[in-house]
Length: 523
Image (tube, rainbow, N blue to C red; front, side, top):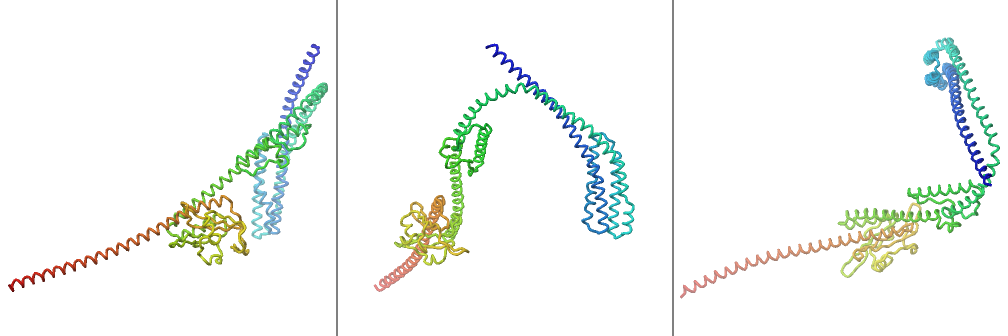
């Protein structure tokens, strides 16, 4: 038994060694023959290319040179001259290609250069024929045609070109012989390997069958893990086709890689192909499910970040407007309502400022944007009256998606339309409502837009308080200045009265002294 096992092991080693040696030999010889075939195929292609280029000197270039100038001379049609001009442009390039190829073959190119000169002479002659045709010198043109210079060039080509093509035929014949020899060597080698390999076929078949059973178990395990850890399509498991199982694994891994790359690049609209409502529950813990959940979270984070940036940019722009206009209530109101309405993408807007006259308080329309004039014929709204007055009392934002009949209309080139959304926001600062803003939009405003409007309201409320404080200070300053002037006038009047009183006293004293003197004299 041990001897049989030893022989079996040795035989397998021998078979493997022989097959390995044959494969190595086969690879070396195939590589060698391949180099021969490639080299000779290149020689054949190059020879065909040279032959084609040499033959093209007559078939294409010389023919085009003659036919174009003849047609032009007879009809004066510039389009017929095109082949001649095109041929002149490529003559040198064609000769350079032939010369370069022949130089690599160590062929004497002096006759080729002489043929090039003959072509150049003929091209100069053709251009002289064109000049004669342009000058309507038809007799001279006909005389030049009769010289048949093209025939001379053709004869020159026959003397040079035929030799080149014969030379290339010889090279090509030798290359074909070597090429076919390499092909035959490969055939012989393959036949020999086939003859040696047949005895091992039975052993290989047995080994394959045994390995196939193991492979099926591995495939089943691979498919189960693929569904468990990567993606489960929810279909029946069929692990009989290795290519399909491995292909599915590769596709899933590729899809996971692409999915991750898309997420890394910020493309949160990426979808996992095949993931649907039917198999969503099966993929809660799989890579597909986890990546999808992560994408949804990142998408939400991106949306929140975009909204945050949108809000910050809007508040920065709005604060700039408030700073630039906080000394002028009218400009502040108009600029603020215009900016907010446009930034929110709404169609209408109105700003109502709190007015306090003694114990009487009411809301007054300070500015509006794109509203129908009929809506605000009365600029004053009493506290608690209507939606705006009620919003002031409640001190909370009001959002309506169904407006009262006839409340307002949005006018456009298409006619009038009822807004799809109306938001009324009390503008507070230090818990005091300074104004009410009303925005009407065809589309419903989102939560972050309403939040932005409330934050912007704080800027306006603060600015309004500042304006009111400034106005009160100016009023107090004006009263103080007026009182100061009045006090100065009073002081001046008192000073004058005092001076008059002093003068009166002095006069009375003088009269008293005079009276006393008169009494003394009487005594």
